[in-house]
Image (cartoon, rainbow, N blue to C red; front, side):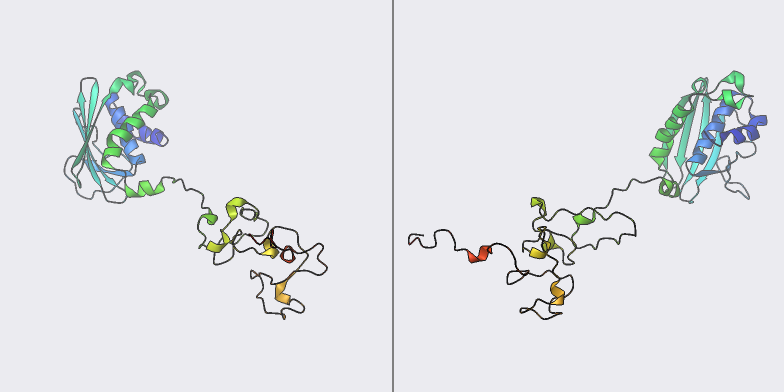
Length: 268
């Protein structure tokens, strides 16, 4: 309960019994959840200001401790009444804006060592359980302040740019690894490029010999193909489907030069 120690040292002259120490701990938990104390009693007093400290006279009524709180975003105002019943304390908290009410009953001996009221390091026990009881019994039913909720860390899933083919991939800073993109030879990449108007993916249904993944001699169609295309006919980086054998002196016969199987079979 970080921060409670200086508060307890400040309030120590007013703490005369275990119930006082428990109220001090409960007060600090509300502070931790985004509330500030306005004062004592059911009705507001003059010149009230939100404070992390306990107000003057907070321990005057030993039977019913009455404190009022307001959230840091001014959206909620709580009325806390801590009622002592023998060895227990009943916490009754009402949100005045929504009229919601939350109740928690605490056994004082479970959280306070009455013989160590002078020693902060020994007076509190089971502090984790106390925080859980207040969070689940008061904060959760009434709702945490909006500012407190915004400060809570949020888990964000990694964005996979390949999941949306219409989204431009982010630029990669120098020295960083480029995002993974499927191999053009992968059977799961077939058709992917046809969904991407920006040409950032691979695996289109139209075979591009220049990007098929098969080693080819260095060909840049934007510089022109002798005897077929003048320079500049193909924009730089555009997907180009050659209309003839690419390269000079390509070894082996071209598959287009071979007759189809059974071409001379009259029954085909």
